[in-house]
Image 1 (tube, rainbow, N blue to C red):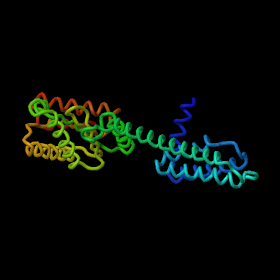
Image 2 (cartoon, one colour):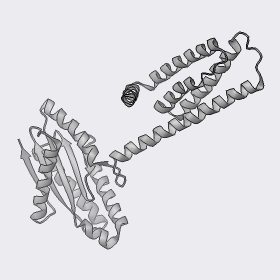
Image 3 (tube, one colour):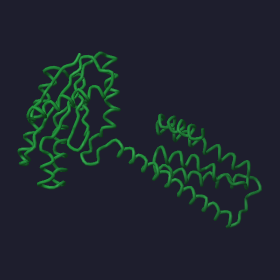
Image 4 (cartoon, helix red, strand yellow):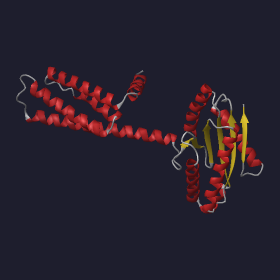
Length: 285
């Protein structure tokens, strides 16, 4: 139950702007300062951790440290305005310094943890070699696109690209050359598709492209041009690699992304069986 509350809280806070987070944290800090003034010698340092961690997590390290300084200022202000507390021992101010140090350390830890989690999320959706999205992310994005196509009755095309003779490149020239080739393939594709198109690396030498609102001759023309550009890139580097492409266009969206990908994959394997290095395009209604 506590975990569910935590997840709901994080999700709700993530939807708000940084300005809103700062306003909420500042108001909470003012409330703590008032409570500090009322309670006197009772330490509320654990509660000051709330706005500090909140800003460090949702905004960043610098803002978190800034709220640590505001917390220290609030504690000192409450001290000097409280009645009967005009004289404080050096031990009291040493405790304030320790509390401030504690808040700074926790703020930095929260910020570092958030950055680590963001980095892991990024690695979970991005292919580390080519920096394009992976299979898992593709299905998430394609699902959204297909739902949009279904809602507005828009067509789309999915192309499945397999590199012919890629294994020979790795065997004869090493994996570093193979990695360079894959990066070249991704850069070439990205240079010749639209910003709205979705490219993903599905496997070692397999790539999938989703072309929204593209069917028929337009889809075939785009993919023919793309295959030509890829062959030119291979020729410039003297790599004996060709491309087998299967493309499935849908006038009406299928029931799932998996169905569309399977159709394009089947067309690509038909190209493989019939001699490789060509484009096979089919339209489904």
